[in-house]
Length: 390
Ligand code: PLP
Image (cartoon, rainbow, N blue to C red; front, side):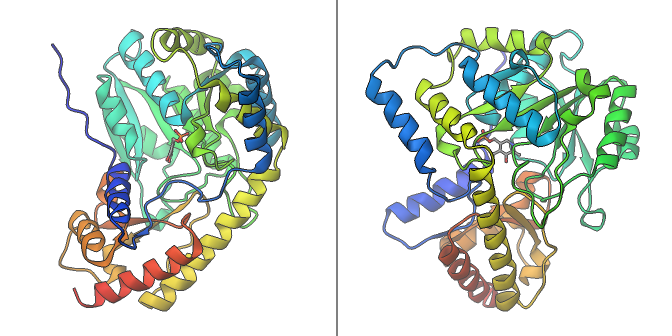
């Protein structure tokens, strides 16, 4: 029997260690969190409470409530110039489970993709290589560099793809680098993928958290490549609804249908209360996302300023998402690797961060700027003080 060991997500591990310390009464500055620390908007809570009060909490429709799929499609089409119908939208338990289902379907059940290579630009979100390996695929890493704004190009696809490469995961806007791709950059990547018959899975869960007035372009906005693209979306980041666990897969009908079958034989569907909460959020249009984006941009700027004051160095400004990748050298650390640095920083300075290794960024540390303001300020000063005596 195949028995693969699946490692735990490094972000979840560091977050859990931090929360264990906090539960023991220790003041911990948790800069690991991949979530906007903002309370759920009142309209969302009210809608969920109203639905619960009706008491009809029965099994959900497997593919998700039609009204939610319709609102999500309308939202994506309106915000990002896409063209998805309600039947091309599936409700899942967060974007993460959408990716899990997709890879389960493609890598295990589809002859064209079974055991094939998945191109993953690094730095990458921790779960990509693990999920790909879990379902028998082969993760092929395409490196990217700070000097080129942590982006890959069509040329990289041509250099790294082999005849066995069948899927590319493109995370735009990117965790952990904050990279955001332009229309031209995306078009050439999509063109190159299409020419090689590579399916593009576009993880766009941070699409609304793009800063400084920069435009966001979705891979779903190129009609000529629509059949070759799957979009992963989520209420988690754009609507600060991480704990509600609502995400979406937008894809051609031929991909959505088998995913619905997998859901019907596993989780049966997504919590119905959360689906009604998501309906209320989407009915608010952009309002909620704008508040989150503005708050996160302020926290990013506060992080950058405090970092400069505490460490005396300027960091490259991330254009999106919730994270900053900081080289160990900028932290003044030359005698520790990132894993040891992060474990000791939590142990000795009570500051929780995540080692870049988990994201394919060796000798970097990932900070989240989504934490509350006083955690950002006090955490960075505590870390700077601790780093000085290393
Ligand atoms: N994709 C990326 C790049 C992420 O950072 C995350 C969460 O941190 C997810 C997907 C999954 O988010 P969720 O499952 O909460 O929608």
